[in-house]
Length: 492
Image (cartoon, rainbow, N blue to C red; front, side, top):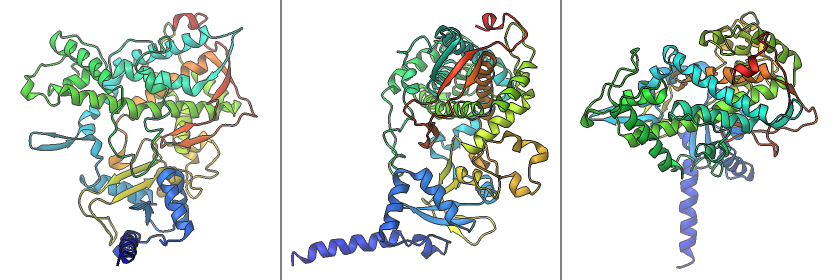
């Protein structure tokens, strides 16, 4: 009798697992062949702990626009066609919203990120541009202090993580701190960590909420600055000012910066919730900004001709006392192409993942995805697919010249950049501003020398990050390419 009990348990487990691994077949979707073979179980393990690489492999193995796969014990619907993914995410009417940005006020549920989108409009970013330049100038000043005979060698990736966290501290937390000269500052704890969940890469468990040990200290900073702006009427033209306006129910699309104070019962969010939003912005922006700038420099440093073209474009800028004008960023067409090529080859979000909130019939198909099931768009694999981009692993900014783009509409739409449809990044204007300012300042002041024998490994955790032991070590030589002889002195 007792011998039958383990047999019964194993049988129940076997039937349960087989039921999971037959989900897509039972629903009629095109799917991979699931089995209990060693190869399939090894593949499931890879998707659990190296999910970006493994899901890209699944993309190349399939042929249909939709492919049902399994990530450990989780059925995932892989969308292999960009146009179909765009239609789903644009037309799904809340079926695939990202739950992190859900917010409930009274009896209404809305997407908080959509409400905050006016924060990142051009007219709001223009006054913040001077703050971004100040942070970049602090970075150059820090580098100049470390020069020996006009040369220095450092890990650019780590330097740019400090730059990115300094930007977010300045604009989101309202701090004037110079993290380049204050290594023990609280925000440097984020810069010194490769990724928020670097210790937890499980596909299944990474969605479990994790509270940072710095959360309460960041809450204190937010609370202090919110009180200053609400009760004392202090105005600072940054994102925190706009978050405080939103908290008080003010219109973010207006030109006003002052806060129209609301009574506590009418406020849109508590200070604690505002602090959570600020920390989410910090965490999401840090890796994407630093990685995009680092990988752009990594690629262009290997191609001196690209660097010279960038410097020629920068040299045409006319600055007053070493300060750029916001409108000049739009004129940086070649730099735009370089940033786009970096985003194509190394998308900051390699996978768009959404959970279906209620059953949804996919457009122009006979398939219905059930509530609770995961839909995934493999951006990294799509943007490295040679049917869309020739020589996808080569860094070729000129592929984004209008005349060089393939004329077919599906190839034009293959480049996603800052997201797609309802998953598009609302802060892309802000990201472009921060990225371009850093590139301009670095290339204005330094010549890059790349060691051809250096080995650089790029991993996705899930954002792309250089995981080589020495990071991104590049030798820099001081230079002045602007005609203004006092630029280096005046820009600091």
